[in-house]
Length: 495
Image (cartoon, rainbow, N blue to C red; front, side, top):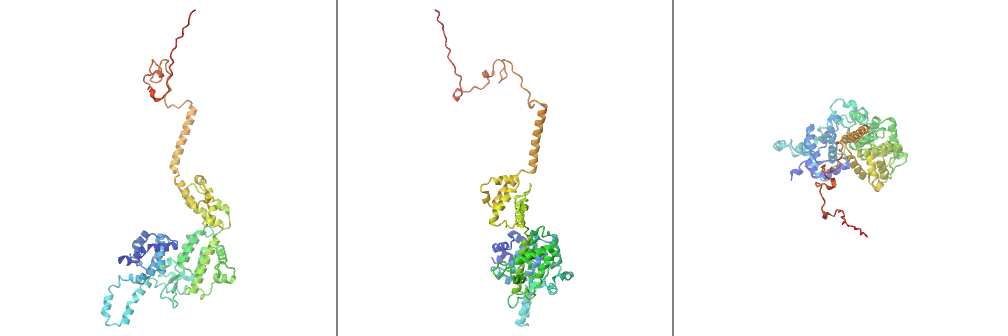
């Protein structure tokens, strides 16, 4: 029993319900088997010091995260949800995990310091107690910063000018960590006020280049960039300068101006609703670089301002993605011949989001989505759905299940081709037979019977109704019996 509670992985598996709930809160799906596989088999092979039993050491977790987020074949996209949830649990531990964290950082070092305590006992008579404590305590606190130790050196320079960071990154010692952008990270002891001390890491050139080349233009497909920036805002917590850098690189001038205009319309006031007060708008969403002291990420007030700015920017991004109302674009979404109902529904709902002000997932808009889904479906699916009673009152998920059933019951293309070939063969045979004339030559024509020949047994001397080989019905079967009349003799009296 003690062993099940002695490792970070076993602790997460014991409380997997809370871990899964944390993943749902982050919009991530977590499976227990994959978590065990990644922790025991995958992450220890990345060469960053990850033990098979897991660890709550934040620098090692961030190292794994940097390897997982590598672009191309070097990355591991399927492991991203699991390392993000693990990181969130370490940074915001639940109550059942908090007591384990104090021992979790020492847990990683227990394999190495097992031998040093013995020499310390021999030196105890020589060193004082205070000196001995100083020698014992530093290892657990100095070992985790070994990975990011080269990072804080150039950090003060790029903080005011993040655009000048690429030349600093080239010398090499920060190259492995530059593959993922981590602008703000907790380092060292907290401030006197209790707030964590954050270290600034600017975005890397490779990250920005990959984001720009691997996503479509915002005007063509805003969904991909919105999903990307939504993840970046949550995981990286960019500063005001970082947000400007993202806007300049990922968007055109017209798109950037439209996003900022929509965002300034959505700045929350004191009551939480959108405000038109220009002073509040300029203070919450400035277009020029704000004072560094008011937006310092190491102060609670500065972090609050940055949080409001990021939330407002994402709201403006979603508002700018909505195009002018054009129902013709919605009606032009028609299900393809081989398109699955789920894919068709996704395209239809995306058209509602882009070309109408309606939210297709809102209950009040379900009737419009249902009618469009039915009327623009494939002919066989449309015919099936139109036969349903109370169609407008049906839920879209119910209709999707019915449509999927019809789609799955369709004949395969090979079966359709075979049936069409057989039908064409019959038609051609009928045409040839019509041209030649006469009945089909399936059997020879019947030879005419002789006058005294039986049609049943083909013997001569009797007819078919008198054939002895023909089975005679029994009288008790209720069949019709010929009525035999008694002959009557008539005599004529001669007079």
